Image (tube, rainbow, N blue to C red):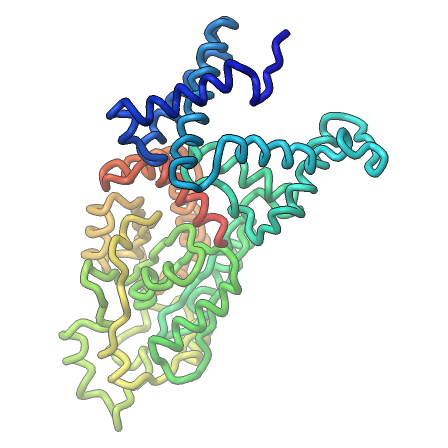
Length: 421
């Protein structure tokens, strides 16, 4: 059998052929490493096809086409003084010797017991060479998305990190004008249904948008969450999604921002109504804004619990704005209406294509029928994160296509977002 080494006549002749083609063929002389990428990828796929369904002759031919690409790139690099074909060969020879010490240094390294142990040895030597800080370091961003994800999962497993995403915490966010008592009965029901639940307590500190955001972020404690904002807290949800790992949002009888870059915490007509009530700039507590709130509460005890947590907010707080990121309504989002108080918001939710449910109740229906509210929240969450997983994946591809983004790239970006949890 002829010697297949770099010094063989056929390989030397191929090198000279490529040098002459670069010198005398206008098309080949005009190529660069970047312009040849498409041909490298095409030849790779044709070689794979030959392995999967071709003959030995087919594979020989396709490997020749791949070899041509190696020589083509090496000659271009030779012309610019970057490296030569000998440098390419020397580099891979050195790498193979380093990463196979069981073959090339048998006296120093025990022979692995099987192929799996050989692979572990390879990876350990490679890890010592690369010293990477992240599981995505060194992964080509142009890898097909599924292969990219597979390699990430493999690296996470080698690092001892969990490869399954943790279940999100249901973060129940009360209106900044009220407190956690409005959510307490529903939280109890949801925990009984198997959900991990956290109710945000905004405390009795002076209300400012920054303080509200800080309290919600602190309650999330770095965990993946499902935001469940009630009433005025709904205006904060889009901005919170830029600060937290939010898997979905279920608005419950909540105000919704528009497409404007900021959202006012109160509409002009409400501010006009409240302005005369302010005493030295402070508004009375929320239950004193209205003439009759008895129907909002199922009994005196629940009313007392809610009223004990109310804080007086300055009128200026309701004149503040919170940021609204562009495209926020395209994230996995649902709406639960508790009657018709927020009928306009419910209509906007439907128009946005969100899952929507309505319960026949009052704005504080969570106090009257926590089981119904909890079941509705749980059902909407299943609509968003349960059976629709495949559809949501397809939506990522479609959205990328509509935006002129490579769908493969959109999926790679989705993997990266999951890794930031």
